[in-house]
Amino acid sequence: MLINKNIKFLIVHCSDTANNENLTAKDIHKMHLGFGWDGIGYHKVICRSGEIQEGRPEFWKGAHVKGKNDISLGVCLIGRDKFTVEQFNSLTKVLKTWKSFYPNASIIGHCDVSDTNKTCPNFDVITWSKSLNL
Image (cartoon, rainbow, N blue to C red; front, side, top):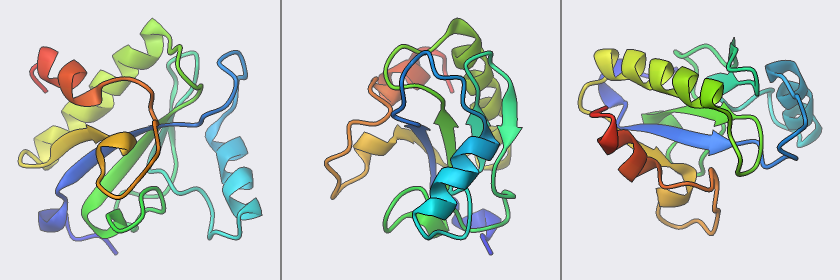
């Protein structure tokens, strides 16, 4: 179980699937079960339409970034590198809400975590979030 005071990172991911593929949290859940995981690793999923779907409950430890799952929450944008305006609007909403609960947590992309060669979510989350004063 996650402990609120321990949340240090709000981590943005992408599904790394075709930009025109309309996947859902249920699809990601099935994919992650196929990896042998306990189910969806992200806490939130943002569909191409901008719909925010629930993944793991926020009090459960995620399975989205090696070595940081016990100190982070993860949100996944469906797509690879061309996200919709609706997705960015929803991402802003999710991150603002999380920041209200975890004001000292840093907003980063999966690629910003040390010891990874991931490019996910394929945009500069730190600069983007700072431009919105998140």
